[in-house]
Image (cartoon, rainbow, N blue to C red; front, side, top):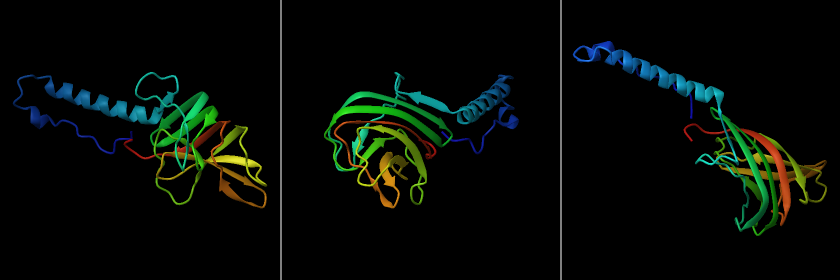
Length: 183
């Protein structure tokens, strides 16, 4: 949802021949209330979590760039806060088995905006995931124009690289990114 850039209000001249004298006032109030609700919803934001029972539910899942495979989860806890196009995700995902292949990523609830490179970096706390030779840190990157929050490893004097899907592990983290409008 994006902030409205214009609003079409009823014009008094369109109601001159109307039998109902209150029609113009009613329609004007209705349009102003709708505009206010749209603005308030965008400014206040909306929060979604794993416990929601409606269609806005977000359950964080892991995936692999090679194949999704199947994953057995111990728990999947996710929260999303979206204010306009600014999106923040918090998650705690633990799995005991996965047949996914390729590089590890988390499926995001909203698409990441188009951008050069990877400016949306988040923090991670991990368990039982191999970082790679010489790597001492894992981070997550919201990849532009995708729904992917990729997991990357880095360290001193070594190249940053994707992390492959682990057969078991836990990722606890947060990432803030810019989404796209009207999603």
